[in-house]
Image (cartoon, rainbow, N blue to C red; front, top):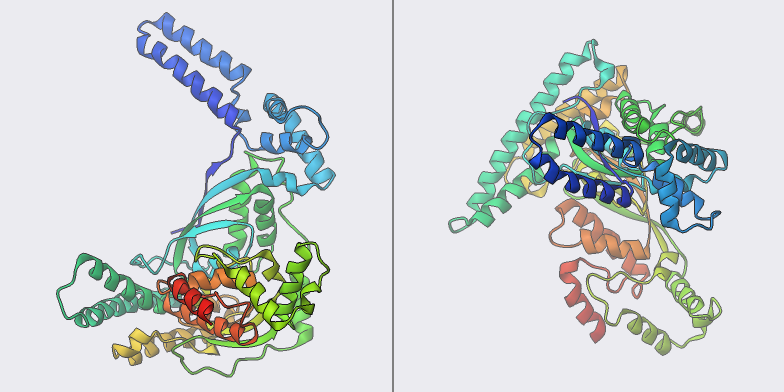
Length: 512
């Protein structure tokens, strides 16, 4: 499937929409009653007059909202009047946007315009780059719940090369193995049930099978998603991808720009950039030296997590911030006795539920991990965009993760052989097209990731990812991070856990 970017929706002034609906409802009886040519001609004349006077198609743009809100800080008129004025002259609204956003540099004005995009025909590899941008919203096709067909992306750079046919053959082999592994896992899970399966149990088996069979799928696998972004971030994406080394992402940036350029020309304007920062990073990489390899190429059954750094005296720092928020000196609580400090912690958590997050003061304690995880796990981790996530490139020799169910079902030799073939071909592709080699790697292949997260966000992360409903690998990652955080911050992390274990964790904490 070729890359397709379709503008699916955008925000429009609600008064304009209401006026349009009212007008359509007013002419509906006349449409039903019209029987002769004169009536129809008169009705068409009324429609044309209305379109010319107040329902101009040009007014159906989010630019009017940006223009109106930009005037709030300098115009005493009521905001409803400002919106009406912006709708009344689109050319003046666009000129105002251009002056305020690009002339004066108040780029936040463009954030009032929002767009929804249908994006399909994008590889999972390119998807990682797209979804690394924080201030966007995504809902993506799941490889965990959907049985996939042989739908994949061939990098445009391979067209006409000796590698093109070989690429197709390898990817098709991986999809064939995916189907075979999925069938074998379903048989394995079915045999483990002592009784006849209910429909819910059958669905659970199918989900578990797809969840682990996907580890042999390639990063060239095609995906689709819905994306919501404001105009400022659409411009940022187009600019960011304009000089990306992968043609697939350059095409994506161009498609995003074209999809909004006619509708909102005053909001998305500068979509190409110079040498900074990509060329700078290339030079820096050459100055730093060759990348170091992990030295861990053997397959593993679980992700690996190492604690690198944490805020010194993190618990004391959070309590000091709490004192400051209550109007005291920053370190006022450092003078409390151990008994008084324990009481503060207990009161802090009293009445908390599994749906509540801790106070903002928890953000002052930060912790940094290095994780060694599969591409499948990274696909989930990257969705937590409020943490700082710094992934290394994919290296074919980094080894891979074997799902425990594959091991238990006796399919390790077959799985290993399949992933090794992917590794060998990716290593060969590196010699001719080094940037394209990751397309041939699988979801099982590992990469090293630096994760910096504050205590408040770690609560949110573990609520979701340490829950029993979470996928097994990211649950293991979350549990390991939590164990290491609790070792240094026992009070701060006291109620961090999966949602399904919150009641038990709360009761244990209150008893101690």
